[in-house]
Length: 436
Image (cartoon, rainbow, N blue to C red; front, side):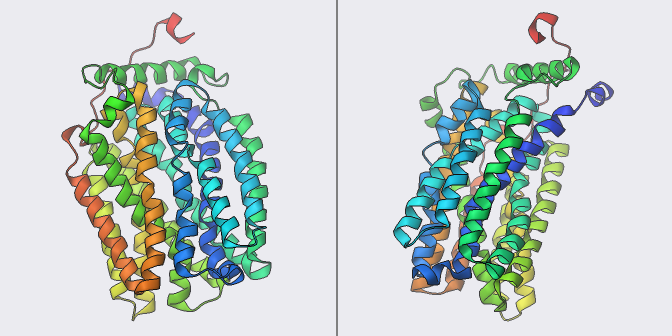
C-alpha cells in the first residue's frame, strides 16, 4: 500500500502550495508592518501613545470577524480563487492609503477595513488545502501554508527596517501595497480551487485525491454532525473548546508579533535597521518549530499533545524573556524561543475541525473558529498597550504568558476524537465515470 501511495504523482505540492503561501505572506506583511512603523516614526509623527498603538494594531481583528464564515462557505460552495484575487486588490489599495494617513482616526479606519478585507483568507486557504490533500498529508500541507508566518516575518523584518531607516515609515506601506498588486498575477495564473477543475493534474493523481477524500467522509458518516447545520455545530461544546483555545493562542501570537519590534528596540536600544535584523532569528526558529512539530504529529498520528507542548514552550519562553531582562542576550534568546513555538501548534490545530465535523460544515466551522478565536488578535496587542501605559512592559508580557498557559490547558482537555488521526480505509481507484 505504501509503495502505491509513493507512486502517486505529487504535482499539487508545487502548483497549489506556493501561490497560496505567497498570497498569505503578503496578507501577513500588511498585517504586521504597523509593528515596525510605530517605533519607526509613525507613533511620534501621529502623536500616538502606547495604548493607542495597541488599539491600532488590534482593531484589525475586529474587522477580521466579518468575512470569516462567508469566506469559508464561498470556498466550499463557490470559488476561493476569485475571493482571494479580489482580496489582493483590496489589500493593495488599503496599504497604499495607510501610507498617506494624517491622524490616528484615519489609521484606525484603514486598519479596521484591512481586517475586513483579510478576514476570509485563512478559512478559504485551509478549505482549498482540504480539497487537495487527504488527512494523512494535511498536517504537512497546513504547516507549509502556515509557514507564511515565519517567511513573512523573515522578509518583513529586514525590509521594514531598511525602508524606514533609509526612506520613511510611509514608504513601507506604499511599497508593500504595490507588491500586493503584483502578486495578483501569480495567483490568477497558478491556482485551481479543486482537482476536478485543474487541467494540469494527471488522472492518477486526481483519482487518488478524490478517492481519499471520499474515504474520509465515509469515516465520519456515523457522526451526528454529518448533516448538521452550522447553528447545530455551534451548540457542540467541542466547537467552543476550539474557539477558546484559538482565542488565547492568538492573544499570545499577536501580542508577541506586533510588539516584537518595540520589545527589541527597548531591550537593545538599537536603531530600526538593527531591530529588523534582530527580528529575523525568531522567525527562522518559527520555521524550524513548525516543521518539526507537524512532522512528528503526522508520523505519530497524535494531535493533542503536539498542540499542548508547543503552547507550554511558548508560555515559558515568554515568561523567562522578562525574568532574564538583566541579561540582554539571554532575554533575546528567550524571545527567539518564543519564535520557535510561535506557530508550532497551529498546523496541528487546523487538522482537527475536518476530523470533528463533516465537509459540509467544516468550511463554516473553520471560519467561526478563526473569527471568534482571532478576537485574541485584538485583545493581545491592545491589552499589551494598555498594560504598558498603566503599569510596565513586564506586566504586559507576563499576561501574554498566562494567556498561552490557559490555551495549553484547554488543549489538554480536548476530546478523544481530536487526539489521533483516523486510520484511513485503503485507497482504491475511482470508477471511470466518477473521475471524468
